[in-house]
Length: 97
Image 1 (tube, one colour):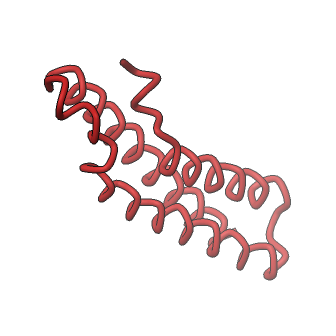
Image 2 (cartoon, rainbow, N blue to C red):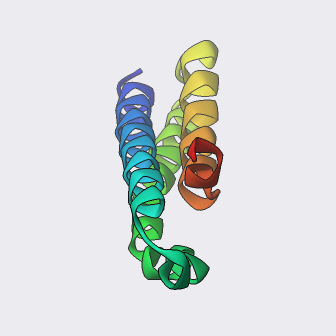
């Protein structure tokens, strides 16, 4: 159960960071003018590095599967890590405008 809890914590950290970065990007996008808006997504590619935290959570959760930990904890850890990785790579900030 230890690996699954660590996987959940890593995934939640990645999820919180992804939401915070996307919110900041939406606020910044609202404040810039027309020429900067054209390439705004390309100037913020550094946010993709935070997907590594979610990927690490997924790996740790899969180690929990190999160690035969409780199924519902492992399933929740894997699903939270997949959601956190998706939110890192999807342009969520466009929906917040």
